[in-house]
Image 1 (cartoon, rainbow, N blue to C red):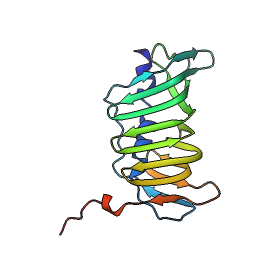
Image 2: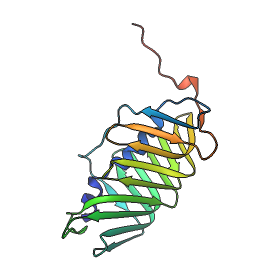
Image 3: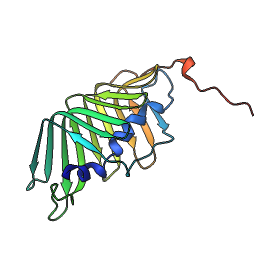
Image 4: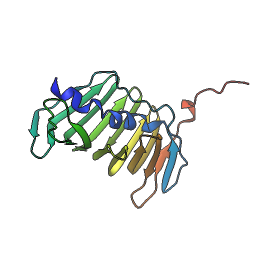
Length: 187
C-alpha cells in the first residue's frame, strides 16, 4: 500500500477535527478560543485510504484522490469528495513512499467522525509547516453527543492543541446540553 506512508505523517488533520468538538465555549460570541486537552496523534496505527480514482503528478509533486474519498485510522474516519496532497523533496515520489507532505486540501463536503464526535464543513486544509488545520465553509458544525457548535471557520494549532471557531459576519452558535456534563467528583 504505497499511499499508506503518504498520509501516515499527516493524520493530525483527522485527529484535530475529530477532537474539535471537545472544547467548551461561551455562547453568543463572534469567535471563541479554547485549549483542546487530550489531543493525540496516532503514528502507530495503519491508515486505509479509498477513493474512486487516484492521479499522481510526480513533476508537479501532487496526488489527487477523487470520488468518495475515505481515510480511516483507528476509530477516526474522514470522508470528502476530493483530497489533494502537495509534497516536497528533491527526487520525492509518492509511489516510493519518500514524499514529505507540504499541504493537504479537502473539498466537496468534508465529514470527520471519531467516537461520539463529528465535524462537517465544505472544505479543509492542513499545513504541515505551520501545523495548522482549518475547516471552513458556509457552516462548520461540530458536535459531541447533544452538544453542537456552529461557525464558518475552525482553526486548530496542532502543536498546542489550541482551537478557534469563528463566525461568518454573524455570531458563533452553541447548544450545550447540561445532561451531557460529566459528574463532578467530591474532594
